[in-house]
Length: 200
Image (cartoon, rainbow, N blue to C red; front, side, top):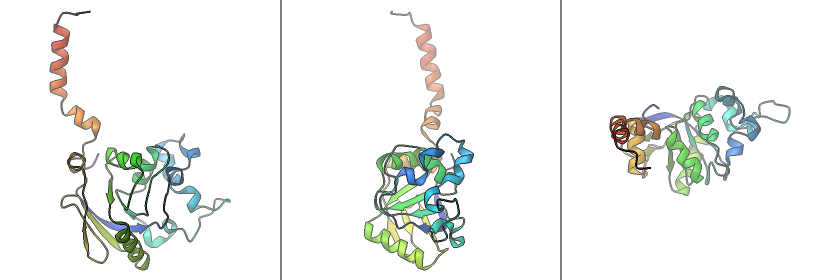
């Protein structure tokens, strides 16, 4: 997966608490290919019952086209454990999420797929969403190297990330890549095992 170091991009505010994974990608789309799931992102919020785009929904607004940072409300990504919620967001261009809190499994799935979830105080996240709503198309910076978020107002907010997860994101390494990095040692261990008498 590509390394995550610093991302400066258009940020989109989502003023909804407790957005669960079924809202991010409804369950009826899970059996489709990953490419087909791209269009399912927030499907039932972005479309009316007849399938027409809802003009007022923030991700349908042209000012936020190409957004790569999502600033959400508390408990974003709660609900079921579907990894598709993260991969569909990534496939729609998002690499960083800023919120007061996340669903635990969604939070973990972000790191496994090369995205960065950032927790900031609830009052500051609400302020960021208000700034972005007032300045549609404004950019933010999420800097994992320095562990700061720079808002559209230029204010820097420090965040903490687990050091191991941070190193993996900076290096573009997931669990499989981490394991493959020890391939020589694994092969040596297996060769030794094959050479030893079978105790059973």
